[in-house]
Image (cartoon, rainbow, N blue to C red; front, side):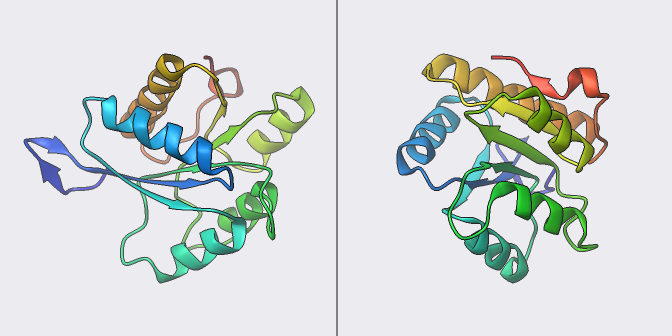
Length: 153
């Protein structure tokens, strides 16, 4: 994780790519209630995501990536990120409403680190965000076995 600290806790820099403003707000509110020092940046489509990363002084510690976005989908972004030496080590957590097994397998095979199905419950959202960031913190950019890919809500 980032070396920046706040009250002896490591500051975690997270990036959320999601075109749904309500989901972005829900995510931000859940993150604020967690006992972690975190900075959240948001982008609203795949083109903004790639522009943000190309202009970034420091890359995020983790990227929460929605699949269904305008201009450039999460699938396209995942492929582009994993094909780019500057970005391929960013841990990517897919954050989507779908849980189609074929899609999930494709995402794992294309290099995503974890998969979270967007929960409708605020407390579950807090739990899966905390679980994802904890796993990333422990394992850095190492990907899990397929059996551990989906973070259950």
